[in-house]
Length: 296
Picture 1: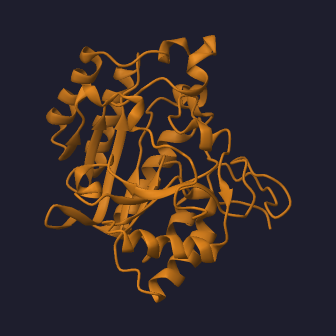
Picture 2: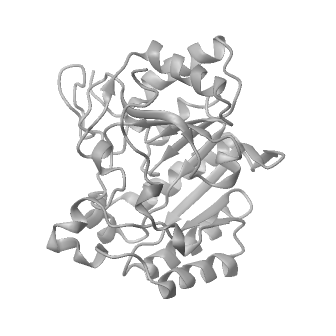
């Protein structure tokens, strides 16, 4: 069967070959454990039950999870094992199941979630992605996902093509978020923990704060009052930006000026949500991908 899961619609027969994501149809993951570095309403006190999937539909040149997104580190598991992992994370006290970079495994995740829910999974399910999604794929998740956590990475198409090979990124991400909001409605909390809704993330990149301002204003114009907005300062050079001269403008952390410009824009746009301290740009915030919780 040809693969049309992501906007690339690469048509790969992933039973027999790799898709653009560099994955077959067999679920591959690198870590499943309590994760404490998401937004406070996601991580809470106990942690988010994060499952980090290998491969990616974007291949951003600066990806902090480069080892699993581009180098494809991970272990192959069955959908039954994935379902079991969800239950194990709930038993550890996770506030939610956090599907990190799940797009290319959506059919398998649907099967695993349905099985887990039949076996007692009760905590919310978070779909945590780069925002580059097909509406048709998202519709298949309706009723299974409680919280969407997408990025809006870029406004400018040329930038999106240069850094993520996705020239249609902005319009695709905005349409995807419309579907996410349609499914979840406005944010709903149980105490300090989000149980339903959509959080839109934006990572401020070096030299590109003007693009950030356009992203912020566009998201506010279309979704203000419907979503929470998370502005992030955690950018740390990873992947190709450290070695490839084409991306040397990204081989540094953002400045206080760049982040303050973006933060001011969020405030002026009236978006509710979260901000990071600039000190969040630390490599230790990237999880250790060592198959914890996957093969145990």
